[in-house]
Length: 143
Image (cartoon, rainbow, N blue to C red; front, side, top):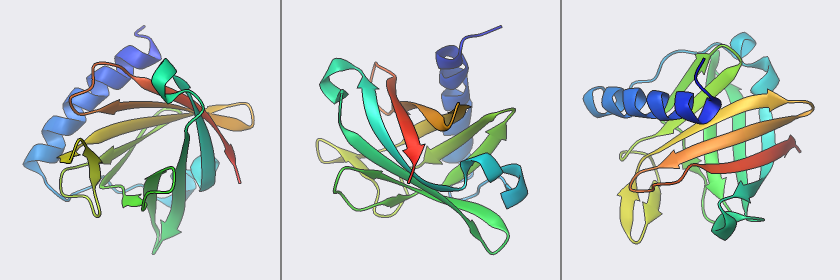
């Protein structure tokens, strides 16, 4: 069985491929399929060293019978998640190049794949960002 980071990498490659061909389409996830994830989550990043201690926020809510989400780094504006997928106990969020206001790195818009898995009373986060060679990790608690 593949490890979580390996599963995330495989999911990232598949989802980026899907996002590039289906621009703004997202799998429909009903709120009852994401009960453990609904809410506002404050994450403290743990890896890599350069990100250690930084804060990120993920908000997940019911929007007219479908799950919606946003992702925020520190005090920057929240970015709307463009894809939400469920794989067993993992919720996978994608942010495409067309996201508003979008994620940027060095002035260039980037995509991101974020996996969330329950861990006790919190969530583990693994994220892959376009043009990054490392998987960023963090742990979050519901606010």
